Image (cartoon, rainbow, N blue to C red; front, side):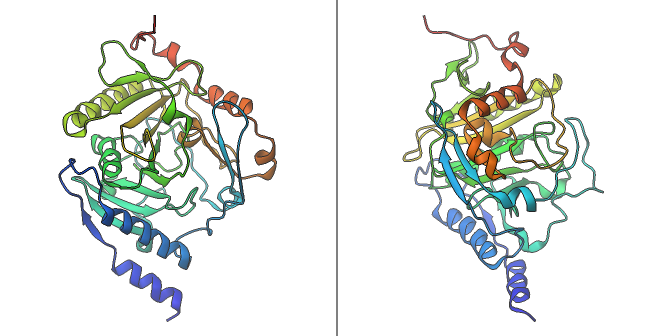
Length: 339
């Protein structure tokens, strides 16, 4: 048996099962959880097991301007990743198409209970180091629409990971999701993004819900979690109600969970970026307007895009992708403005 097959067999047979603590009071996080996530990812990446390429960020730069877009060149993600297939917001789960019950067992990093079952898989076409997929209730055959468990799992993970650089993102059908099986992206980003430092405008009559100011590149709403033991249930319930409203209006959406500050946990911001029109994801391309790009992190697959993309061009692409979300939802979410 070859060394590669031996390593693969070992990783398949030793996938850890990890139960998260039921307590949200420990501000120090869970170092063992982070160690497991990072070692299981690194072992597979270094051995070339499951990955379509070895992660290689060829170049990176910060675009000139006031928002500080981080632009990275990763050509292999464009050429080597699995091609997305076409589906829109109301598409049911289709067992005949690729889904995460079909992955090679060697791609499974962890089976989590938090308190809901979730599987952590390598993302075989990574954007950053430790880029993984979190699949709530993997055997449950859920389409790519967030369930209550899918809304809560990101908070459970971020609250327990000691490293505040970890973020979690989600693309709905019609908003650059590429597989119609419920999953979220867990990845480490080593720099602040504009959505972390921006001011937020409170939405009248809706505690813990805020709106992004008009001058920002993206339009969106944000639930802020400052006291998990007191407010986590309210925040998750509020997010579910907001997403249900978007689904009723057939509005696709992207979500992003992040700590406000990387050095110390002050609050978790859960952003929702609605889209006034759905997009049909026909093929992988160099620049997509998905959750990462909306938040200020732009991974491109062509050298020309890396060289030529400007802040103005990125902002124009994001606004074109979203449309006028605030106008579409103005009957629901009035804004408290400063006097």
